[in-house]
Length: 80
Image (cartoon, rainbow, N blue to C red; front, side):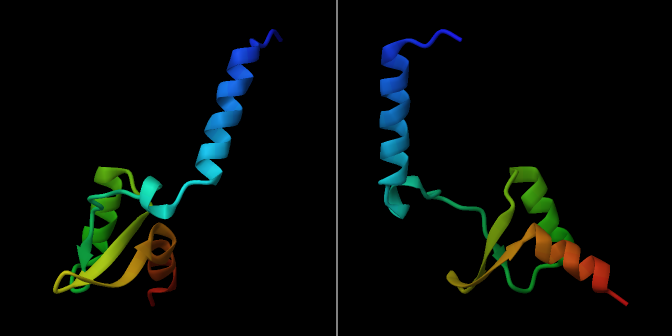
């Protein structure tokens, strides 16, 4: 392969910036959320429609938890 010296420099800078970033610099500023009384189907639909793997769960605008795709799969598999 042929590598331009400037490409490596930019790559190194991007890695250094990403690893030194704060959470606030890389977080989603307007995340999709779901209410704690919503169904698992609603959560799965939001995750699918917005291509996210986790959703903050809120009550009255306050964070009360996080639901992940794996939580939904676990609930489906263990449902009697």
